Image (cartoon, rainbow, N blue to C red):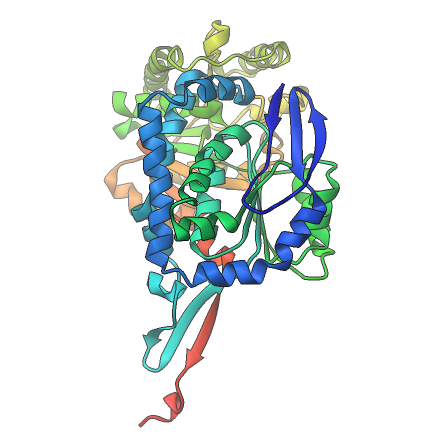
Amino acid sequence: MLELKPLCSHEHTTVEKKQGNYRILEISSESIQKILSGGSTIQERLSNIGIRKRLRVIGEIGEIWRERLNSGRFEELKRILVKTTGYCEKLIEMEFSLVPIVLNEDSIKKNLECSPARNIEVLERFVEINDGESFRIVPAGPVLIISSGNSLLPSFIPSAISLAAGNLTILKPSLSNYLGIVEAYGILSELASASEEARMMMDALIISYFTHDSVSLRRLLGESEIGVVNFWGGEPARSSITKIVSENPNHPRIVVNGPLTGCALIHEKSAGEEVAKALAKNIILYDQQLCSSPTLAFFIGSWQNAFSFTRMVEQFLEEIGVEYESVLDDASVFLTQSARRILQLKGSHVFSSKNIKNFWTLVLSKGGSVLDEVVNHLPGFNIYVRRRFLEIVVVDSVEEALEHIKRISGSPAFKGIDGIQTVGYSIITEEKEKVFEKLASLGIYRIVPLSDMSMRSAIEPYDGFTLLSAFTKIVYHRDEKTFLKP
């Protein structure tokens, strides 16, 4: 039985619970309230540390993680996360390799510099932005982050930015990746014994899992003096948590990173082997469970060229997929096989694998998606069940593809998804400017090359906003007689 202990530098008590194969020691409501009562002092002390010192501590965590990863120290952790997440060992290895990139001093600095003030020194003092007018960014917390379970990284990114911004930060990771998050931030606890800056940052961090019926979590959301709740995930948890937070007399800000998905846009003149390989890899990575994963594709061109392109994707799915083994349960396999038969009856061409450890499906449809009809027959065949599954819709023009993209979020096949986060493109140069402007008007958050849909730049906003703006307040100051100057 795996034991999940809180990570917290403060003296605290725990409430013991059991859930499946886990023994959970969640931090008690009394301990949380005691820590929060000193929250303003913790934030003031942390904010008084120079921002570059805060960033340096985060960078040290990443570097020590890299050293330990290279030394083979995380082999047992890797084996545990394979079981808890359901991802294969190679994917967990990739996740581990990305942690130092996320917890990187320069990367976090660039992210902060893309705030409205564009100067990280506003996180430690008033900085003149215009003649006689200054900004100072202060913590909006304490911040409670309820993270998702599809990857380690959605826990590290907001928590690191929240700490860098000077917030007392309470992090609730997913059950599946909890041990990986604690392993990384345990490094901060070690650094705290030798570094005053690290100690203050550790004092500002609480990590605990809370069960769905947790009294501690309910009180934290609905009664506690917190400033921000950042929720990553979908229904029904989103509505439940939003309702509880709305009843909190302290009126915390709630920031939701809701369920989104991705699609691919491919022009026949750019549809070569490299593009086919890129599409196959993005289908396989995380079994399409990222908000950026392509779960529908549009091919602009002829059926014949689309068919040839799909055959190339098929080849790469076979080659890459065997390196990232994925095991589906019997129900998912049954639903997928049933969907394949319906798609064939509807006139789509279906390419598929019989290998349960690399159980992929490619569907080629003409003029429009057939997925809605499939889901109407098989309601259980939702976007979360459709793993390594992609329908490629052949259309005649960019305009036709854009019309289909516009309708995705309201379709039965994408029920539970708020919209399209990412469009991965491989289109000819003369079409790009028009396409990008149209996609922006449709509310797409990320427009990136198909080859690196899953990769994030350090400066990227998150679903239309910067996390720094979510976790802070901007204080405005104006000098005397600024408006009276000749």
